[in-house]
Length: 119
Image (cartoon, rainbow, N blue to C red):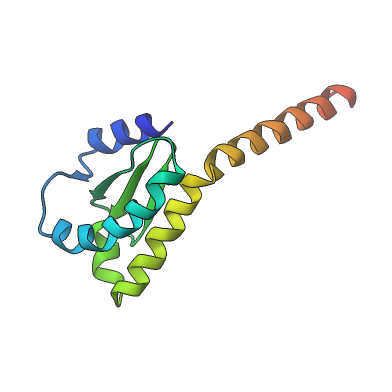
């Protein structure tokens, strides 16, 4: 799932390979990565992506994406740190995988109910 998201962003030319914005992002995220990495079995990788909405998101496998718009939107370093820590916590706690499993259980229950009701 994480790899397919990366491939999709590359295909859409949204991953920013080189930018002065990395000079802003890396000093902020590196201490977070050092703290978070021992709690996650895959190496974290950080990517800037070009999107108009200020956002950050993480995918299974350790990819963390930060939109360039977020770096312009955050009013201070603390707001950026809070957002990045929040996303890293989602990854460490496998939240996206748990949400997918929950959706699958709900879909199976709905299908079972439809079969029982003859629909």
